[in-house]
Length: 215
Image (cartoon, rainbow, N blue to C red):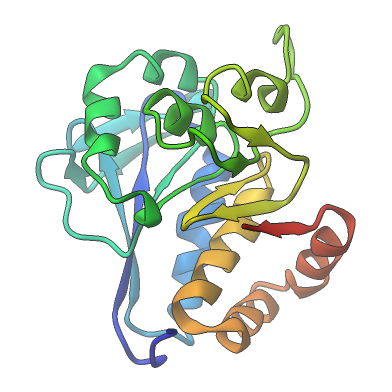
């Protein structure tokens, strides 16, 4: 059941060293713009420790909360970036994700690989970035099938399976965040936010080309 537009919602954005800045923009940036028509929606950044986090490319952001102090959120979005390789072995990250209800978890881009390492994606239909970049030997979409037991990787913009949402690569963080806003506030509000950020045509085109897989 979607909520009234005046109702509060909090989106937790899980960050770590080596996140791609575009994933931050595609989540927090969309929520920031959404607050112009959904005044009680907020985003909070969460890292292992509160404070500075150096992203891919050298940009530094300040994480609002630590894993220990993270507030209750309607959804926790795990962002992607080359730092995922360290995070799939990071016990603090994996333990934090395992404490959260699966239906409150989402990922954008290679954040899905971190969810897979935490065991969240076992047996689910999922997606992530489709193409290998730079020196990567394997595309994340191919790799994730080896990391999540019984998972079914699909080429899609967004996948929701039993509450867990995974988004495709890089710029599709925008699509995934819009999808989550629609789940919270309804499709009419989602579409209005897409129009506010002048992404309505791209959102429609991505759905037509890649599709949404709702399980």
